[in-house]
Image (cartoon, rainbow, N blue to C red; front, side):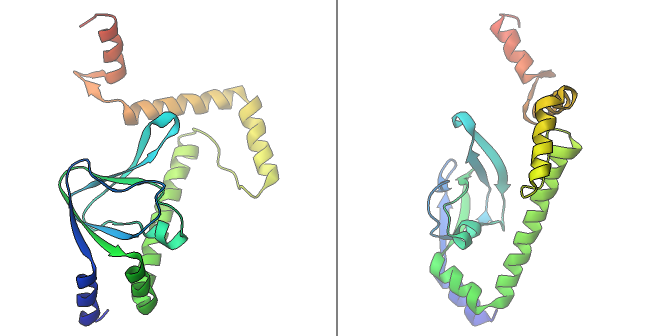
Length: 196
């Protein structure tokens, strides 16, 4: 991209300062443009079941957000909230789409980034489901594979018990904080019983 186009883009972007807890964009809202973290960190989370939110990542300096929603013409799939003071650049939808259409190298770079991100998600999914044995991955277009997977989950008690135990172990490893060397959940139970 030429220096002139870079300067024009710089003039078109908005530089916003967010304080801790301020929402940059909300899950389910239509995309207005793209966001790039300049300084600070943003928590990215999705609404989970039973109203609990699930953190899906931390956006750090250089992270681009909002592009997937904008390019798919769908609402944002997660909420981005500032973890502290953060500077976030915003480029309006029309300007961003023009930038991509007029600069094939920029569009190719974005596609490459999205492909790498997808590879990471796929690897993590396989790791969680198969390597950790917390469930099954099947080809969603293969009816026989789906039927076999359902049969295994419904009727193979040993497999189902192994998946459940592994899922519980992973949840405890990842989400239980330690307080005075004791798992957080155990500490709460002790507190509830009046033990100190």
